[in-house]
Image 1 (cartoon, helix red, strand yellow):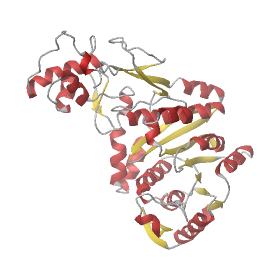
Image 2 (tube, rainbow, N blue to C red):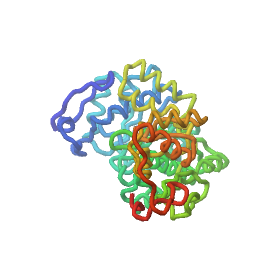
Image 3 (cartoon, rainbow, N blue to C red):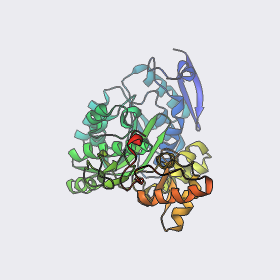
Image 4 (cartoon, rainbow, N blue to C red):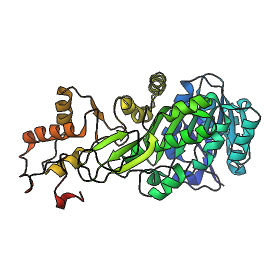
Length: 405
């Protein structure tokens, strides 16, 4: 194969030349995705912000992630590259020598799950286990949690976003044991389903999990969870599970501990996403250190991915689409800032949906948001005539002809 030499971060990498000119990098002769550089920036920052001394770069490809951790973090971190493709492994070895980090690198050419299970059986676990497959991470989750140390971090990438975002709900139920929701906040729902899938798998091994960082970027979803060993920890983690209930008829959205089939506002049939992780997504102590590392390194694109997540845990596990609400009310579009100001004057907190970069995050209930939109719409356009039967949005549903909106 033709090989190119590139610099990512401050690390020299030898990669297949064909990978640099392809919209979808080929898996042969060796896999390298240049578009995932921001993903790897964040991994380096997370490892730098914690204290672990060993990392398994499973499904390593040419080893870009592990090499950057070995080369760009001040403390010494031992890296195990787990990759069954010998051509990929040859490039990883070459890059390790070029960066002078070969003394802290081990190269294992075995099946990922078989090796991860073997490490658990011999009690030679890792402080970090990274799973970044081509497609769904579901087949590797149990091996990853089996191989991580108590208190260690498992990081998981899912590129089957169409599945997690609700385009293929049957596949989502099969792979992740949850029903997704294909609406205006489907990326947040997808991320929470992936976290809860990690929790379920870890729980089967008597391991609890707590998210430390979650983000959605380009075509993938990425989660970092801390694993803590013990049946009681697994039971405690299960308390973070819940559902998001959305009513297509009136737009009411809410979080629930239990699955619901009827809207609590209008009584119509509701859509219920989950089970999913409904608790916090960010480790408040570690998150600032991750941001600081990215800022110090001037990794502005990665910093831009994470900064909007700072306030995500202040709000329920969903958001509202102001465009959808305006459409239902048949009023002109209302600037989000006006709606946010109105809600904040009433004592509610507001923010921007960090996973979608559009939409309103707030602790206000749906009726309060609708009221704010109605109020502010009067400043940007005249409200259209009410429906003939006098129904009001969110009180007894929409007009019959609007139900498909």
